[in-house]
Length: 388
Ligand SMILES: *Cc1c(COP(=O)(O)O)cnc(C)c1O
Image (cartoon, rainbow, N blue to C red; front, side, top):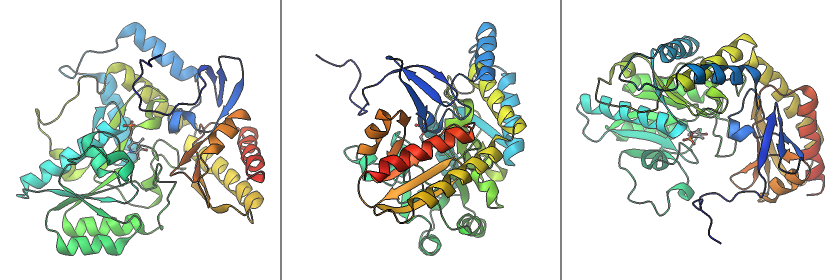
């Protein structure tokens, strides 16, 4: 029998029919605690009543008009996001990769306007920026690139969390226009850089007139204990992208720009048919306001700390656990060997998790989980690892 779905994912043999907070129910009525949240998307939990209400209201009113007309919901969302982030303006897209494409185009156009005919962006090892041609070129794993050559020109790579490498590039390459970086690498296995990494990069960018371009597609929207992760480093980027948790499951991405980066585009440079439509913007506005009003980022920091401490207590000395790390509700447990089998074993016990780079258990639960749900995630994972 042929599968009408293209063969792009190795899918688990389960389909969910209903969600409620941090819980999902499958076709057989079995319940699962969702510690992955649709890959960091369902930050307020499944079937959140305020999100549902906004979708209903907006669907009754207006879904789409195109960017050829004013879209007040887009302006409202942009106003909220620029205020929270300290950025100046926003371009709305439909995904993380698309938001990154926008920032890549701004960086290149800025370079061209300065007379750099081969504008080049510094990217890092193990980075993940998406699956479009530009963003897979920017990504740092051969897995997403192999077979899709020719890749794009205009990217140079440095090791992650290594300032000296950036300084060396600064000395030897006159074509650099931006450095594109995840403040915490997600797909790369929850890699958290030294505290002074972003401030030092900010300084190098200022000295060289480069844009600091932060990909907060995964770390944004309260996930790591502040609305954006960079807010914990006392710096502000020139370009900033986010997507995943922005509208709790309705597709949206945004590229925010500041200063010179905010003035690069003119009409005709970039666009999107669906981007920033009234539905996506109304839902994102509800989500952003909810995150702010209910201090969801602070809550993520507290629950994340609780989980991290519990893991450290219960797994320290475990033969196969190499490292436990996290910020807010972005948690990684690194084992000394591949552990992708844990995904199915956790699922059998009613827990949804993910494994990144083959040997890091990655947890991205809804930011609204209760202490009891957090403890249950910890218990189940520790039980599974006890048999490892
Ligand atoms: C998921 C992710 C992307 C890609 O987002 P899509 O919505 O899948 O295009 C880009 N960057 C980071 C850091 C991500 O985690």
